Length: 340
Image (cartoon, rainbow, N blue to C red; front, side):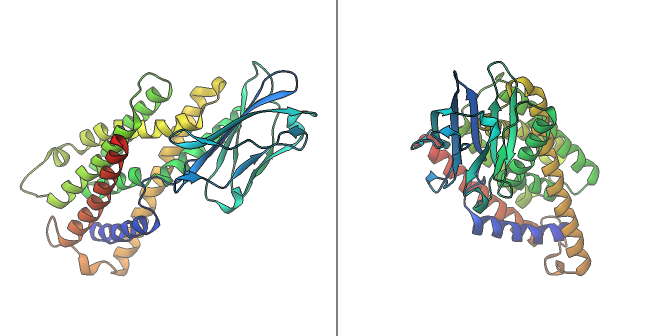
């Protein structure tokens, strides 16, 4: 199984480098519509950046509203933001909102809508397959649950750095029991900091946190390369403890994405729980896919050429250097961005 995982690692690293040098795919877009006065509505529209400029999608309000689009967005350090006041001659929930050109992308848009002052927010999720929707006049807990679970799954599967950390754990901890404990510790710790950071109990600047997350992957890569049966490191003695410590940092990264998306004020606990469930679901999907593919490769003999004859064999070393190279690049990139 280990040799199959190392072969799979080479394929994954190649795809990562071929697709993008960045650790995250696009964050979702965010559209907020809240009542102002009379028939006026305050609209806030955030769209991701692509190669240093705003993604070519646009929020379009129902036909009875004017203006239906915002002005030129400004960059706030993470996304391009525009805001405007619109006046609707007919109730805004009687028409459809539409995200123009969303169907030609691979990102989603979260919509937060408040029908009247003091009313609970409604949360919708628009996708490339369903780029338009009618705003409901009332919030449902079910819509919050499904939307934020889907956003959690999307975020973890798009977060290559988090997945690479989990992948390195699989290579380092062959014992099934210890692996379960390590992944459980990682889950518990990042769930803690995700909740604390999202609710405002802790706050750290994200650029250094993202740089240290990359360093955590580099640390595991060094462990993969230098692993020695005769010398027990902390990672080998207590993998769950190391996974727990680094999970605290990864939770801050998850929280940053959730803070950008926003939480419905009346359903914060439910949205937070749903987002975390989505993250764990995506993480388990990733691990299950790796193990299934590794099992198939092992059965077909496709990895015989790199099978290990001792701890620290050629296949594992190549995998460690591949992971470490990507992690080192991310560390330098994020450190330069922080000081720049």
